[in-house]
Length: 307
Image (cartoon, one colour):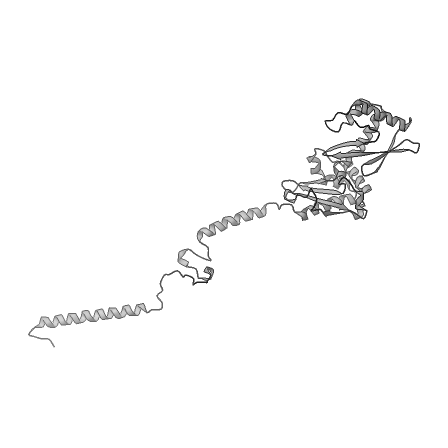
């Protein structure tokens, strides 16, 4: 009911009542929103003491996922590319690879296959600037055939050897067969397998590979100079390096052989290892030896005087 005596008062009261009701409604709405379970705060979860960070859920808005930031993923991608490139590089030669290469050499020797052997020794020949042709390969096979039992010949790694340098791509093997190992000297039963920088070039060393192929030509030349009584030529031939051999040494050697041969022509045969035998046709034989080392070869003969 409106107060007719003071109608303005009634209006003010009505307005105030409406304002009060509106404020009450707003408060009720705000209170209801604060309790709405569908409203979430934006917060980064932090681990409790003793809890692994990896166990916490990732913050999708912070750029973090599976424990890696975008920068981490880029770095891992780069690392992965490097690892992939490294995986494509040739694998460094190891003992297993060296065994395989040693096996190829022994297989060629056992098969008496000079052609295959010459192919295997191609890089070895290039290294020494000496072409290992089929004729030289046949001499190598002959040396192994006489001095080893090829059927039982095997190669065993010798990690205690002085030439065992796997970090440099070089592996030392001992050649063994059914015979007595004590019969070998001067590393005659040692096989080295070395790899070039790219791992595909294989170098083999054994005295019967490095020196033996030249032994027969050397012996033949030695006998020719003696028969021709060429003291100057023999002195030059006996020169092992930069050490000059006096001509008188060659002359004395020739005289010793003249006495031994007594006018006969020398008959030379190969015995074993690096030993050769000269026969004078009268039942007498004289032994001399090819010596080698550091890429040089020489002759050790009792008929050559010391100087």
